Image 1 (cartoon, rainbow, N blue to C red):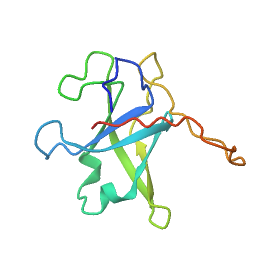
Image 2 (image 1 turned 180 degrees about the vertical axis):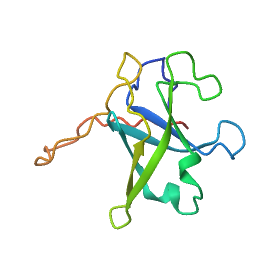
Image 3 (image 1 turned 90 degrees about the vertical axis):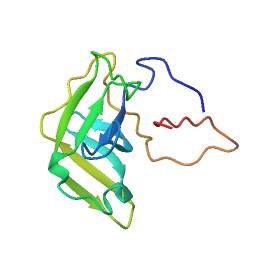
Image 4 (image 1 turned 135 degrees about the vertical axis):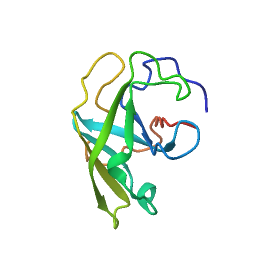
Amino acid sequence: GAGAVPGAWPGLASIQDPRRAGSGHVCGGALVSPAWVLTAARCFRHARNVSAWRVVLGAWDLSDPGPEAQVRQVRQVRQHRALGVALLQLQRPAECSDFVQLGCVAQQRPRPRGLAPCYIGGWG
């Protein structure tokens, strides 16, 4: 992978447990609406007290999120274990800006022939 510049991945979220060492980062996610973040269900396999967790949006360095970052508490988690995904509802909706935007979600359509570009963002 390669480092990103501030604002390059405005839909990327850091899901954090404040009881964990360092930034508390547990998993990455994508902001799919102002009040919902999509992530992996495995992130909550052993989770306790998820309402104390937070979601950091608009950051590019978790050790120094910067003034553009928005922090939201988690209201609820809805898991779909068969699909392996979870949705986090935020206590307060995110405010879209140059650094916080909805993540791209592919439309369902037939697969193109050959290889197509694919980008994956995460916290490494």
